[in-house]
Structure formats: structure tokens, C-alpha cells
Image 1: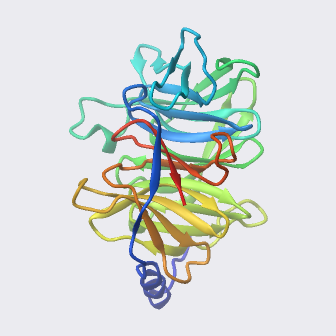
Image 2 (image 1 turned 30 degrees about the vertical axis):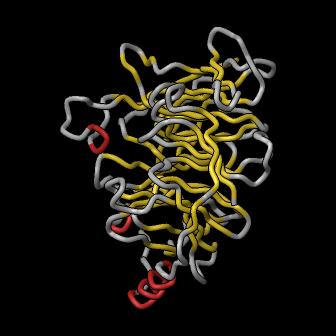
Image 3 (image 1 turned 90 degrees about the vertical axis):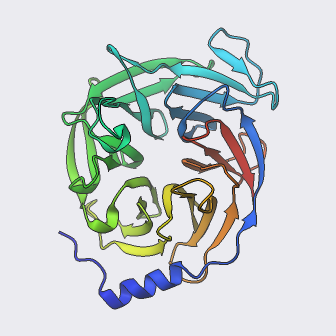
Amino acid sequence: MHTLLSKSLLLCAVALGLNATAPATAHADQLVSPSLIKSTERGVFLNGRYYVGGQHGIHEVKRTADSSPHCKIDTGSGFTVCLLVSTVYGADQCDYSGMTADNTYLYAACTVADKTAAIPLLAPPKRAALFRVKPAATSSTAAEVVSKPFATPVWYNGMTVLDNNTLLMTPSAPLGTKSAIVKLRITNTLTLDHTITEWLPGSPLYLLNNGVTVNNGHVYFVGGQNLWRIAVKSDGSAGLPILLYQTTINQTLDDLTVKGDWVVAAEIGIVNGLGLNSLTFVHKTGLGPTFKLWTGLTQLSGVVVDPGTFGTPGAFIATSYFQGGVYRYFY
């Protein structure tokens, strides 16, 4: 078990996190219309190519025109959207609720909601599986798709690569899951057999776990309204969680990325219009003021840094589960 920060240090960290500068409106481009891809959950870059997963499959988004039957061109931006993997999972339709990539594969959590539940996104899913996708080298298709059911269906929203054949994942539902972060170790690369063990125990401070990423020996992750930094020990286990930022009660955090010395989180109002939707910048140390780029009524659910694929290295490429589409933000 982990011992959390002392009360005095915790309050100090909260105070620093809430010391935010006034938000500025971000300059944004819509790269893909919500009419082409609805409910976009997460986007990732793999070898300079951009892929987005969500409620309607896993797609590649690219600047070049492609008239293939499985592709559509956005008439506004000229970008092309191509379907790599459909939502069909047996007799069900799944939501790609989490996604990440190593140097070869996309990894995604294919989750089938229990639509009989009062609030499906907060209830245990009906089924869930790990998908591994190898994109074709010369076309916007999947050269290989392998899947393996999770022994216990859980909504995994955050996913990141810890090391070779090892993922960290954040279970966001059912509410009050006992683990904040779990470690998935692939034991058979052909069949995708795996083990899942606890990496970070659950806590009331980690409700609605979401985005997670690894950067320079640290894990950064979202626990609802709190943003945390955790050192990865030499044996791969979790160090002490350090609170970097805490938002207000009418807000929550979703995904996050790292750019330079900053952790950039997608922050949204729990009720759209009654809270501030923004990209929130928090220094890796947790020291100093935060600052925000306002995204208007667009509630972002995924954010990554463009390596130059879409023409502007360092821009933020973002998705929105609530509004759909793909967006680019400049700072």
C-alpha cells in the first residue's frame, strides 16, 4: 500500500495547483468534422501517423487524399479519415475507450457497455477485450488485428506503455474500483495472453481515473479532479503519488499529455457551459502557477502533441467524446 502525502504537504500542493492564471482562448482548427467521426475518445501517434479510437471504431486521419471505399474526405479541411478497425466484437458493438501505441502496434480497450444499466459509463461493462492492431505500412488498413478478452470486464480509459509488452491502464468504472492503475503484462505475443495486476491501489482521491502517460521515469495520471505524478522505481513498481494540481468541484480532468516541462490536461466542466473547458498547463514539479487555454464549449477527451504530421510540430491534436471530431490547438 502507498502512504499518501501528509496533510500539510497535500494542502500545499493543492494551493499551488489552484494558483492559476486567467485563461486565454486557444486558436483552434477543426481537422475532422463530428459528422465523419462521432464520439472520438483517444488519439495517438505511431511512427508519425495519427490514429483515433472511440465509439465508432479506430480510424487513421491523414492530410493526403484517399478515395478508398473505407475512407472519407472532410470537405472543410481536406483531411482524409479511414476506418482501420470496426466496432464489431462478436455479436456486440464496442467502444474503443482507451488507446496507446509502442513503436509497432496500437493497443486499445474494446469495451461493450451494459445498456441496461442506469448510467452505462459508470457501470461494469458487459464485455471488454484488449485489441492489438498493426497498421499496414503502405495503406490505411490494418495488417494485423489480434484480440483477447479481459478476464474481468472493466472500463479502461487511460492506457500507456510502461516497457516492452507492458501497459499501464486506468479503470474508470465501475465507480470505486479497487485499483487506480493496473499493469497488463503480455505473456504470449502471438495470442495476446496477459496478466493484470495492481500497480497503484485505489483511493477516494482517485475517483474516475482517466488519462495516464509515462515520461522520463515518471507516470502522470488523472484521478477525477486530481492530477498526480508518480516516480517509477527501478523494479517497475510505483513510487509515492505526488499531487500536482486539483481542479474545482464543478470541473473534472480527462486525458493528458506532456510537452517540455509541462503536463497538459484536458479539463472540462461537469455540466457543459457551467464550467470552463480548457487545456490546462501544470508544471511537472507542481510548482508555480498553472495556466489555461480555453476551448469554448468543446469538451476534450484526448490530447497529444503533433510531431509534425499535420504541419505544425508542437501543436495539440485533440478529440472529443461528447462532441466528436478531431481538433488542432496552437499555443
